Image (cartoon, rainbow, N blue to C red; front, side):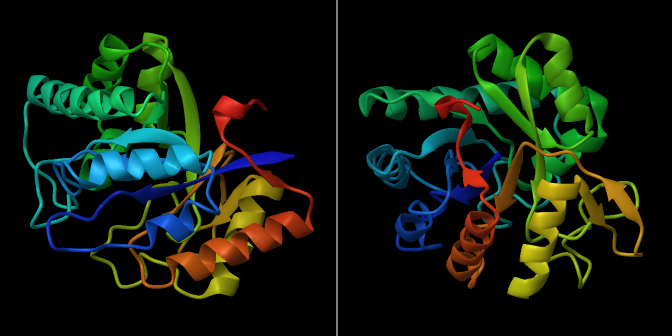
Amino acid sequence: MKIDLNADLGESFGAYQIGSDEELLKVVSSANIACGFHAGDFQTIPHTIQTAKEMGVAIGAHPGFPDIQGFGRRRMDFSHKEIYNLVMYQLGAFKAFAQSNKTDIQHVKPHGALYNLANKDQEVAEAIAKAVYDFDPTLILFGLCNSFLVEAGQEIGLNTVQEAFADRTYTDEGLLMPRTEPNAMKHETDDIIKQVLMIVNDNIVISNTGKTVEMEADTICLHGDTPSALEHAKEIKAALDQQGIQISSFNKGR
């Protein structure tokens, strides 16, 4: 059995260092690299792409709202045309750096508030999917399991990947608990590993109220900006290895 393990990386900018990217790239199979709107900059993006390439990790564009102060986690009210354009703008910059490093883009995964909005707002999902398709119809679109984003990608003709989260809690409807809630994140390694193994082996998660929610995922995300991200990544890999489950990106075949 194989599963893709992805992380949000390339989020440092200017004098601010965020995450342990080079160490995480030794563990994950796919990297979602910030495109400069919510995090990342013109130095960090090419460096992260080059490092991922050297380590054999597939790269993906991680476009978000233009919200450096809020790290892209605050909803911004844009028209659907504006959302289309802001995604297209970030994909263009990201592809330029990928081409200069002679590497291909595997996927696109929206970030933060843009991702959450696309999962439950059909028109936003369609705007993002159309931008990705118009930019490059061979790209894979990552979206939350059973979401409007996955549905929109499939309808327009993109290859889509359903995503679950190692370190986030879920509502009874299978959506991510809002970060404004105190229990939105999982912090204990044992809890994170338990959730990962349930997703991979049983295609379920347990919601914040104890309800069993179906969650058939092809990729699992671990946030790279948390203090214990590297420790969690190593423990997840060890747990998967113990069960004979291989961490592998989509461009290496399934």
